[in-house]
Image (tube, one colour):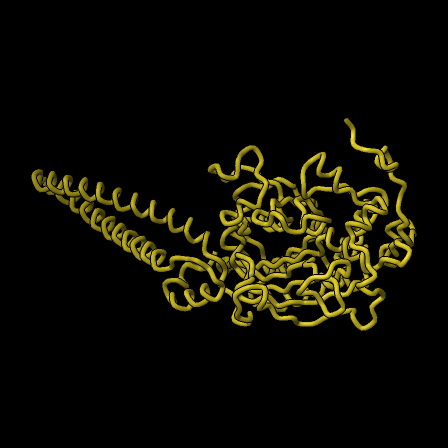
Length: 459
């Protein structure tokens, strides 16, 4: 969450920043609640001071034997106690409301973020790999057709066993996914990342710490209850991204300067309902409800976070460079930033199999495979992530960053389409071949069952 002092010291700057994001937040009401809460806290302090003085006067009156005045003072003390309880009860109620309301206020964009209302106003920073393309987009078979022809992607049986948005990878498709996971983790390990294998279910408290709750509850898979029901801090959700468990593993702890920067990577399966996205990307594995991802999470000192963001972006890009997949970098505008981000770069890989209106002039489309974001102290305030600059100094909030390194289904799409050959086979990128036992080409498999013979459905 943002620093509450920003609302008190420069509310107009906060208002302008949130307007630039297109955020619908009633700042006036928040400011009124905060002012009333501070008035109550001040009044409570005054009343306790008065009661302490009365208590001292009672002791003096007892010593002097002034019974009537003592009784009056005792009655005054009782009245003050009752008023203190009323004031503190109202202050507690307002404090709880203020904390809940502050959880709904998005991050303040960094001043370097370009202004804009939505993705149309994102700024392309650069491209890589387009100087010598190996394929012509017009000759490419989309991954969903190729995956079926090679019998390495089975959406129909995934939908049968679980539902739409789920799929099977088979044979070389499954092997390619495993190879990508291990390859990515090896790349990032060489970049100084420490491996983690986190738990998949995460608490509501952890989801709140990274900003998934309360705003994005509809996109998450909740265990043991409906998303519409009230939830407790220890209720569990399926992990939407490894960012959640990895960031929260240090919640309410104090790290030391010597610990920082701290760089973790974690592979997890991820689960998202993609609420509000019904009817889009209905074919293929671009928009699905379960997907694998290697996540990069950084914990740094505040003064280092923007230099680290540039390095983090380069670390994620390295995967695509080694896979020889053309891509571009976008700097997101204020209106397209995620809830918790102060600044974000998107990495979009080129998938030549389907033309999109906003695709490159070479044809095909862009697929986002990573968002490299600096959250500054936004998540740290929510999750209680602090560090101590020096052992004798007070603890301060650190800065968190993360990026996907990378989201695997869309990387798979790009490989199947960009490394596709004229005969319908797929050349395995050289960097992945050692992870597939030296195999160089995906040639496909024989289908099984009566459907392979063109037989009709069962009765």
